[in-house]
Structures are given as structure tokens and as C-alpha cells.
Image (cartoon, rainbow over the protein chains, first blue to last red):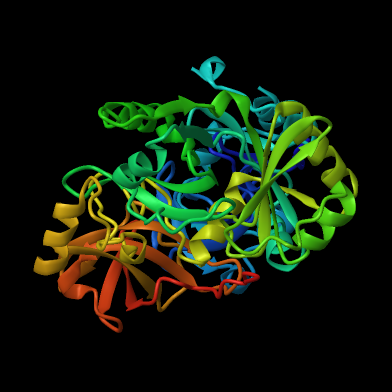
Length: 126
Length: 365
């Protein structure tokens, strides 16, 4: 049921990364937004913070629960999506059109351990 | 584990509607059907229906029924006439709460008690342990009753129109028993949302019919336990295990008005009298955060760098958009306007102690 799109890298904790040159945009998947329900708050890091692969970098809060954001890659935060501060519900509307943070990738080999669309789609069906 | 969960008589309907099901008090219950926000708003502005068949029902009957209920219950049942409902608690001798409940007076020798699902076994055992010397019978009738709550400003109109019953004559906190299809059903003007509405108790067949008729009309939205909690929270109705517990007395919870000290006796009276005289060490308060963030159950509340308590329930209020919570804190910090901090993950968020009622109730009285 959940949407998965081609060309992104996916993590087991339901984040995605879209790579553009030396930068990666990180967001949550459609499966994640659906499981969370109405999202009311996104706790984001600050610009210049370092994020570490497989470590928590913030949280997405729905009406009923808080869910940690786990970074699929290491890097330095160069931008946060400030639109989500006032409109966190955009993540429910389109989880792929609304990235959460943009990072400068430290090591592109981080991407090797992530899944492609097909592999991720299979895990969502399990 | 999952297979041990009980199911209400409406279980198949929840699954067919695509509800997100989750364990609650030993039952597999619907948390939401489509969206907590949509369901919450339906109850605030139109009408929603909740399956609350998991709630427990106990009948206390016999010549000493009134005296026994009066012994167990903090509110005063002596002035009740048949058809009235009262809210109150059962207490331990130390003033801690066994449960909070509704008492329906069916007749001079018949009282119907509605208790929390998670506490059914404990409550029934407590009543039985404490009924010695009373000529009254305590019967757990939880299995015999299914229950729905129909809540919202349009509840009266829709219940009358769709179920062909008269409920506009019911005042707030009164009920009547109607005979429908040869069986009795209870309609009471009560609820747990801060809106006008009714709770309907009957057998599985009738409650299924009520559900099908109301939901089938398209005018009453199925609502899950998710919004039941956001609704009751906004109007500061306590939830047992959060704002009330064996470790939180009604006085500490700010519910002293439901404890009648002019009654000759009830279990816990001495402890409450002592607490009223000496003052309380902890208190349930409201806190509004200055920033957007979501304070949740269990998060620490701090002041001047020290932990002073914890959040009992918190949300970003759906009706007001404010980040608010109820918290059990050291009473020295409980005055309105006191600045406190709530620790959310690693960060401290500043907040102000405020009234617990974050949204005005809209009862028809």
C-alpha cells in the first residue's frame, strides 16, 4: 500500500536519502508517515550539527507518539527544512516531496549498506 | 501474547473499517480509523461514536446496597433518586485510588457501577472483600454488556432521529432504561469527551444494531481510543493510571469535589481528612510550554535544575494547537504562573503552570 519511489536509498528504520552530488537530503518514508499517523511536530537539528550514521538526529511526533529519526548517513547539516516547523503535516501529505535535513556527506560508502527501492518495498511487505 | 487479547462484540466491524488495532486493558481495541485529528474534530463539532465495550459493569443489589456503595464510594449516594448518575472514586484506606467510576442508581436497592476495563478484576475483588456485614450482592456483569459512547454537539439530534428513541428529556448525568426488541438498554447523558452525548449499554445484538445504524447513516463518525484520550485530556478529565492511581489521591489530583467529607464514613475518609488538614506534597497541575514540542507521559518536569515531578498526559492540543500537559509535581511549584521546565529527549523546554482545563466543556445542562 505504501508508496516507494525509485532512485532513493532507504534504511531499515524507514528514512530515505536522495543524493545530489556531495549532498544528501534525508526524509521519512510513506510507510513511516502512515504508521505514525497525524504528524504534529518535527524536532530537527541545527545547521552545522554533525549527524552520524545509525544515530538519532531528531524526532517526528505524531498526535500519539514520538519516533526518533535515525540518520542513514554521516555528515554535516547544511540546511533544515524550516517549512516543517509550521507545517509538519506536509510529511503526511507527501513524505518524499518534503525532506527534513540536507547534509554534506562525509563518506559516500555509507550508502552501500542502504536499500534500493525494490529491496525496501520487500521489507515493508513483511 | 496477542492471541490472549479479548475482543469486543464490534471487533469485526473495526477490522472491516481498516482501524489501527492495539492492545488496551487486555482488549484488542481500535486506536484510530482514519486520523485522530479528524475523529477528534468530529466529536468537538458534529458527532462521533466510540466502542467502549471494554468498560466493566458491576451491579450492587440488596437491602444494604445503598449503604455498601456509600462505604466504597467517595461521592454521596444518599440524595440520589433513581435515574441519577454520580462520578467518584473508590479509595484504599491510605487515600490512594482503587478506581474512578460512575454510579447509576437504578432503584433503592440497585446500583449499577461502571468501572475501568483495566481494573475490573481488582475492583470486583475489592468490592467483595469489603462487603462483609452488608446485606448486598456484588455481581460482575461486564460480560453481559456491550457499550458505545455517542458524543458531540449533534449527538442528541442524531440518536433520536436514527435510533427512534427519546433522549432529549435526559438531563446531564441522568439515565433511563428502555425496552427495545424485548431487551433492556441503558441510555445515559454522560461521556468522556467534554461534549454533550450519550453512553448506551446493551447486549451485543443491540449494540451492533446501534453501531450499524449510526455509522451506516454517514452522519456519525467511528472514533478510536486515540481521540478519546485527546478529547478527555483537553477538558482535564482524569485517566486512571495517569492522573489518578493508588499513589495519587483525589485531593492531589484536584478532584476533592467528588469526595464528600460530610458522609458518615467511607473507606479512605480518615486519610483524606488528614491530607486536607496537612496539605498535599504533590499535585496534578496543567503546564503550557512556551514553544512547540510535545510533552508526553513520563517525561520529567524540572525546576531550578532539580526533578520536581513528571508528565501524566501531554499533547499538542488538537483543539487549541498549544503544547500542554498535565503533570504530577511537588506542590511547592504548583501555584499558577510558576515557571517550570519539561525535559523532552535531551532538551529542556520552558513552561508555565496553568489551569488543567485547556478547553471549555460544552455540556448540555
